[in-house]
Image 1: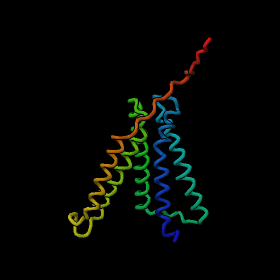
Image 2: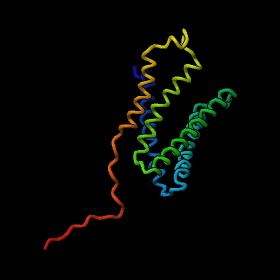
Image 3: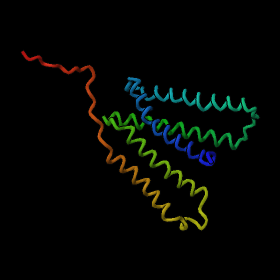
Image 4: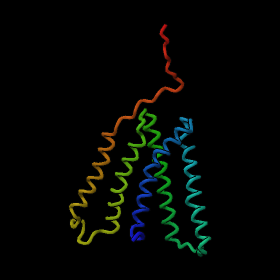
Length: 182
């Protein structure tokens, strides 16, 4: 029974980790305390994390499983393109967060990630439909599917438009003074 839901467990793990990704990326960028190059410094460590997670970990698993080292060209190139798309997307996230934060918007992670997480499934659905058209053509699409796409777009818009305002930050170094009564 559990193995039939393993896909859902992993999908929810991705929801959690990618949901936190933008927040931590933004905090890392700000934490670099370099308004000019902070985003690039943060992205450098994203790359280090990718290397540790996406190169060393599968390499150890392949060695432990005694895998052959045959990498067919089609799989190699498509996987490389997928990695490039992911890395470029991560870089665009960072640039978007930085540009919005530079405008004084402290809610940058909530805005940027809401647009990404509403828009990415729409792009995925459209590209998947083009690659694998439905039986009966596009006119055979169920109305619920079309409404779902529209709801994803509307949901992303509503989250960004009506997000709660961030509490004002307290100025650094200011200490409340207490007047003594005599």
